[in-house]
Length: 509
Image 1 (cartoon, helix red, strand yellow):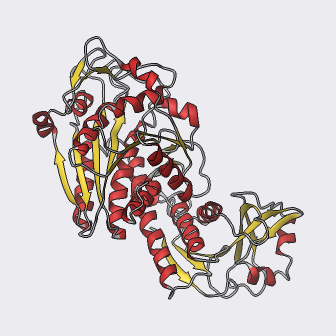
Image 2 (cartoon, helix red, strand yellow):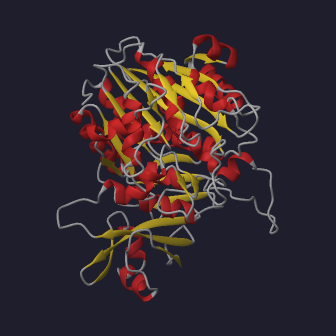
Image 3 (tube, helix red, strand yellow):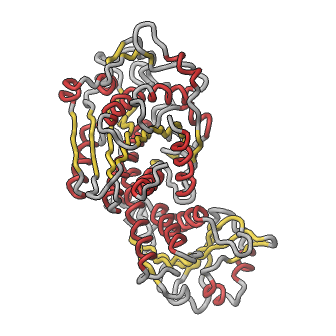
């Protein structure tokens, strides 16, 4: 992973492959952002004019490279757009700093060191720049194929090796804490990204569980893995029903972090379909090529538990990973079959491609047995949520309005786009079944809400619960932007970690 150092050196004197400066959109053209004063001085105070001549406007994510002026130790200046310049007296928005740092780090792929001279007025700014740069420098190829060479002899996909954060104070406790948190958080978001990007022939329920056990040993986490025999003995009909068509049997993994002084417990439940063909209700061509990402919820939950341990949060965080591969075969669950869930409820399977709610239902029931203070499930659950909110925003449903609002505010705070969604009671009757307690499908219109209503049926009365449908932002099929790469994004990790931090502070919401 890219390393991070805090530096009080001048942007003019620090040796690096490039010095990164910010440029914003002003009323009369591009404006050089604070932090770049020494670089601007080297250009005789005319850096903004030079950038404008080169076509730079300061628009968000815009990257402009130019040769360094005499007096700068770095040979290249990289100007990155911050968007609209803030009003006089206001600072730059944290998300603008994250995205700019991420775009710059990605543009410096293959470089050894980048000196980031972006606006840093306080530890919060430093955290945003550090987080954005470390997330923007991510490369799955570098992590998993580091020895591969491209035709020009350079390492394929090598990320920026070092981020030197200027304007930070390496001896200041708050700046150090901000940097350490950014390092831990980025590492875990990138852990989730790695899992999501791993091809399904290399990641199945058993190998996912093995990865959890390995990390648990390193970070002192408690684990329990239920294999197919234990699942059958325990009556986990939802997980077994989804996984029975695959040669790779399912797993339910419990991974827990506990703090000796914790007063609250947070349970996280993740959908972990390591490949989703749709089962007998086979997905059409063009809809299954990226279905290795259908375990993004489980990846986010796993990464969050490890992050809580790394940060030493004073809260208990338990992750439940419902892992299965949904495949068609002679042994697969058929449309019309009835499954008996871990809760004892029966479910008529009308569509085997609505499998995520089945595995989550078993895991939710099991998680409720431990009486956590709150449960949040995370899943790439429905295409309907993508239709409703697009590719960059996840939906939040909950049985407690205050908790739903709190999660939405947390997501906004950390820079993850979300939107609160309802659970209309009138949709409940659409999942009634003539042969079972309920069906796994209901009304087509509002399908994302119907899925949330289904899940609510498996949450114990009185338990605070929320459901995050991350189907849109979990996997980026278009080009990279800001600090978000193409492929697995690690969506929801930052929201869940901040939720854990708030819970530790006594502010559960």
